[in-house]
Image (tube, rainbow, N blue to C red; front, top):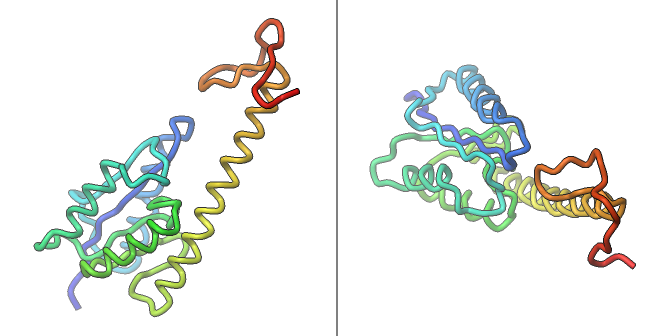
Length: 177
């Protein structure tokens, strides 16, 4: 059997997250490849920084997909840390799975043990895609609730503002009574 040539895709969603997240994800994927005797192609490590996974308009992801769909495939497999790094939308998860399968490119989410070569791959991609989508919506609601709570207590809520000191006199917040 020929050695599997692997690309890696890594992503983090917010400028408030640790940029080393990308290197940590890449390290986990490299370790997985090494354990399986696969080759990671350094020229095919793609990433997106501070971009949410609810949009497909990500430069690194688009370059990865273009390369994966080329007639002369540069790699056989894409390694990701987990499915949420690729997308947090169920429809996009299933579409990407279908597109990569059609192109003959294997997809492996190393932390979850999801491998598109598995007979259960489509089911697992769907289940994890659904979990990722629900998590994203719940996180957005909790973030909004927290920001609203800060505003109601008179704290600044704009990006980068400190919530240590309230701003002068309290003003009405949209939606509050």
